[in-house]
Length: 145
View (tube, one colour):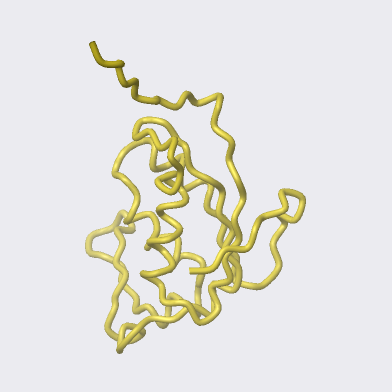
């Protein structure tokens, strides 16, 4: 008779969450967003459990210095519904001038699962346009791509 293998299932109270910091200066949006999404979901840990939030906190600074490849600053369009007939729309270049944090947070949001747990994961993402952030007390560890 062989030994029975047991599958580890993480419980919400026993997860230790780390803090990571990324410098978005001269980083490509999609490559940075996919790395952040993995950290928020917790897929980098051996204790990953799909129905439990096992991810870490992520702080991103210098979001206004992020890059797109090709002509995406002029061709990529963000659309949203305002509540009135028709859609609102703007290019990525205009969004960078108006709200640069939204470019990266939207890219990460679309890479997370489409369920209630994704809202909790996204709340652990802190994006700042400048190089200052109020999370020094958590001592975030720098992370490179």
